[in-house]
Length: 432
Image (tube, rainbow, N blue to C red; front, side, top):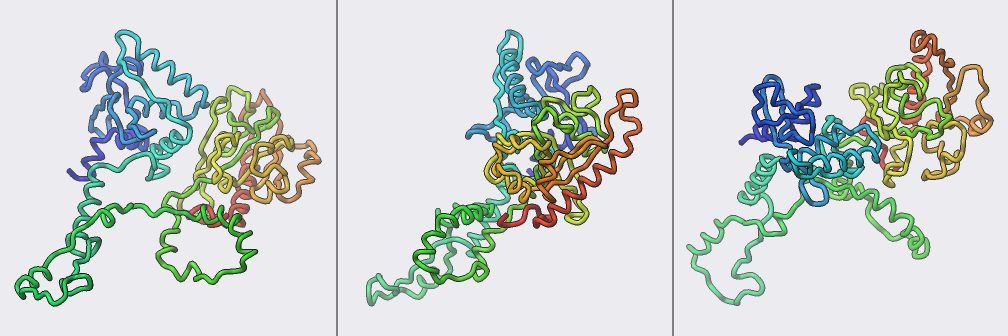
């Protein structure tokens, strides 16, 4: 079976393809739906997920285990589909939806079984892979045909003697009996033997692992020892090609992060930030016209940054809280929206404004004609201040033509800041 054929029969690949072409699957109560009566919008009663991809119809059981692995166990397709449906809701709402669906599944006459609550980091990785923003996922195992192809390639290398194997020891080598003669015909047979793989040559990984962050963290501890003991002679990294190869960046480009202010007085919040930065139109965050959900805790925006990568959009992550941050997320923060209130920074890695805005661009947005707060002015060039026209409820979004100019100025400042801090088309600068 070819790799393409295996992808066609894989539920995750089908869901990813459906999302890429905006062809939404339908939940059904039959494997081969033939009438409208087979449609079942209730996920607790549905048994299959049906796809129509370019005229090809496929159905997959919702209780089918997938290649997505969580806590060592495969996650069923119903849990995957629920996570995709709830990709923009807040974590408490997603957990509540999972519990509610489990109660409905257990009710008489429904599909039965249980859905799994996928934790935040795993869910974010899953959504990123499903949306096509990344071709790799640390939680999704390789397709069976891909593994077979990799194993066949490795076995061929071992069989040909180009890799792996255990060296044979000639009879006359050290440790063998002295003076033992070998029949010439037998020696010819020995010389024709092919090396076979042992456990040390077979158990090799297929992905290079980047341990550069360990070197960075260890530098603080090793620095004191080196200061007392003096510098030890060592070869530069560039003289060791094998080590340099192992420290190469992974293929997946890191996504820059933009932090919003959680303050209720902020003009930009999760509910209206996408309308502003993506569409160039300011809408009040509490307005019914705001495009995003008030309960969304993570959003994505793609933007071409010509001076960094003119051919591929950079995908930004927008959040208003750093509670779920891993330590390495902070090096991806490129901009922080602020109202001038310093309590916003108390949970950040850098709690003092001058230090924070030396690592990331600060952005203040206020009403046109009003004074910029003195605290913001005191933070200097690390913070960009912009102003928009006050909202006119009678006019609505019509006439907000000056908002686009403000948005472009903000994006230009973000792009310049990222470029100055070493961002390239491959992503985050090394050692930052």
